[in-house]
Image (tube, rainbow, N blue to C red; front, side):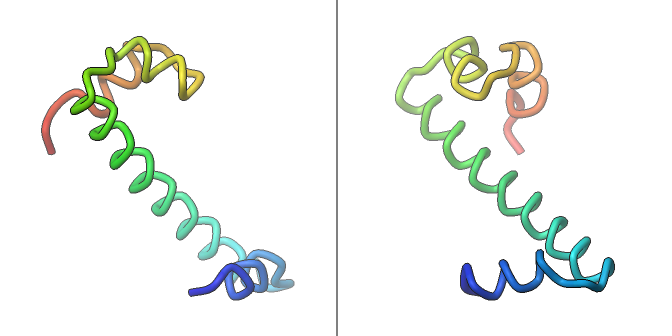
Length: 69
């Protein structure tokens, strides 16, 4: 899916189409977040540093990503 395709879906007048696009964006964001958190941990970042970068507490990011999935 291209950026133009996604923009079209998000801008749809059909709520079902728009909401499916929102769901797809959420899933993509979760995947990108997990990949970069794993990279940061491999590079020795602390949970506090990761939380700061994401604008959340270290506790919340650790609770979400601290256990291997």
